[in-house]
Image (cartoon, rainbow, N blue to C red):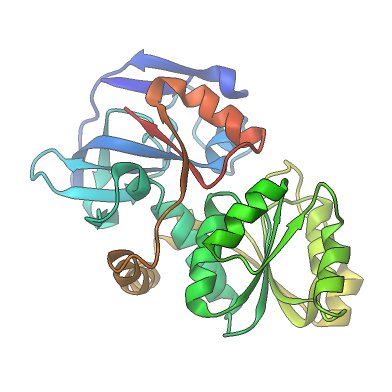
Length: 313
């Protein structure tokens, strides 16, 4: 079969399309013919060697997919530790979800990681109706999912992005307040927009100094959910600001959280019907052939995506 291999540690240039043996399912696994593969910022971190416990080259990247179970013909979607940048993948049966009929292959591949991450961010923050939520990188995969879910949860959303064009599209998606971080300081903008009160919750995935700035965006008893470090730097904390606000910080990493089947089941019990009713619909900004995986990574690293980037074998 054809697959993308990360041949060494580095940037997009390390990704190569090669012929590799078909995967052999182990007990508890099924062979899935991949119809579409979601591209995540975590994929770029793994190829650069920044992903905790990540695979070592050479390996097949890719955490999520939509496809057809070879043996039964079932349409499924799911996520795996690695291997989704390929024509076929061996996946554990218990980790598969039904591919909703109203979704295309690309939309189904764009769902698992982004929407479960956004859902658990709201869950960890114990978000309540009418609370204010600041979503960084709002035009990304998790950001657009968080905006859609925020509309259903009844929160007031504030989102940062790099252009007015992206913010206008996010407003159509349901974003309440947009902040162009290229032209405005988002800490100051949040202060002005909230009359000096701040927000209740921040979804933070930038790392570095942005973690400290995000803390200062919180109001009293605010909560911050950290689910990444896209800037490549470890989070920096403003502890005086945290103490002044009695703020709390929660770390969110979907891979270990997914082992708790009771939490995953509850999340799917909520989101499955929303998908079926059309209340959630993954945003796919780019669809590229599998051979252009390197270009997909470049788009992510250069912040040129809107919603999800998807590869098709």
